[in-house]
Length: 297
Ligand code: NAD
Image 1 (tube, rainbow, N blue to C red):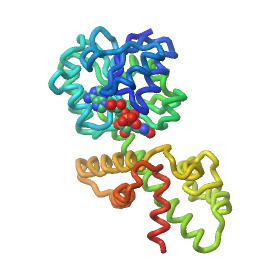
Image 2 (cartoon, rainbow, N blue to C red):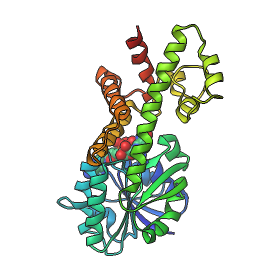
Image 3 (tube, rainbow, N blue to C red):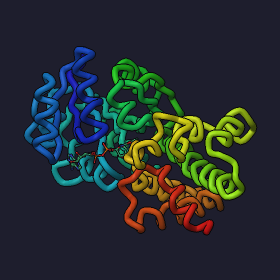
């Protein structure tokens, strides 16, 4: 069993840290919120006084932070964790961040004699709670094989996507598809509605036809056909629209850095920006169908 430092125990990191404890690992947790750290302590974990304290004496460190600037500052900023860990420590950053920062931080870690992987996840809070996340992992093979049994305590599918930063590339590409799909589904359901086809008939036909996709089957944006979808609980997330917008913006940063055009990715980013700016950022991303419906009138 490993001794693991865990930094960032929010909506995702909290249940992930608790699943490590359930699997028998020792976990030392730090977060800016003392209440969130206490929840990990209540589940059998230890409390770290600050980020550097969380990485001292442990073999493995997992970070689950909001965005690239937080990851850069926690790892390489003043009182950063790379300066406090012992050489050979394995760092796993599971935050969803930009590819450039992910690669820079991994380079900085390796320069100090550490191992590091980017390992963003999909599966949301339910996946984190049920230890059913998918991990998309970038970095060296040796580090991947060391991390795999630890990640298996928090996830069901652990995929090595190649070198440093490739986990983030996979995550951003996946979520660009998801954002575009939800808008396509919403437009089609609104059109069907206006032309007199019921949502249930639309779902029954399309989910068995060439227009079917993961977002339709799992996150159908109208109430009824998929009882577990957010549409049945007034679009309470699930996957908040503001997080979808964050990932779409990362996809557009990545497209610019690769010097390519992604016209549908760009349009999805513009539409989700409009949706979030209208005050619905905290609602589920599938709630965008309400804006699409208004636009159709
Ligand atoms: P969250 O805001 O609930 O958790 C982030 C935590 O990091 C917070 O508790 C915050 O206090 C802590 N934090 C911020 N700066 C810190 C610092 N300097 N030191 C220590 N702690 C610090 O967010 P979340 O929903 O858990 O998401 C975390 C990451 O996972 C994000 O990158 C997000 O995009 C990604 N993600 C989220 C979901 C989801 O459905 N929530 C799904 C997949 C991926």
